[in-house]
Image 1: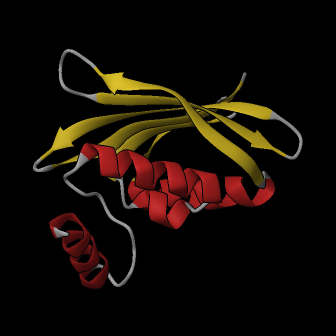
Image 2: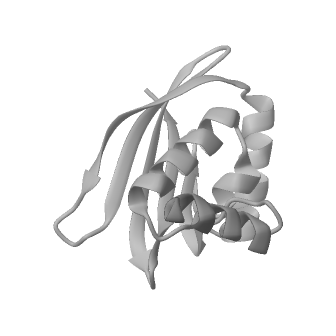
Length: 132
């Protein structure tokens, strides 16, 4: 019940937009849902202010706003059919990672992201979508 109320408070305080939460398992579900839906706007709530972004071999360090726009364009030109997490875990230094398989209408891609603790929550510092 408390978890549900906290979630509702976050949604109300952020105008209904999903943002980084302090519960890693809940975050994993929200990030998975955002990727599955091709929802770059919700995904951007979990991005660090600067991050390494790699989309089909084009890699650069970008701001959160730039990453959101690049992901919007990517998801628009690559409609998602399915996304599933293949492996996730925690490194010795406490950072969290996830590897997933993203299927579009024309290809199967690998998604990788790395989250590091920032204050009370985790933020994505690296995000990659690459051909398998």
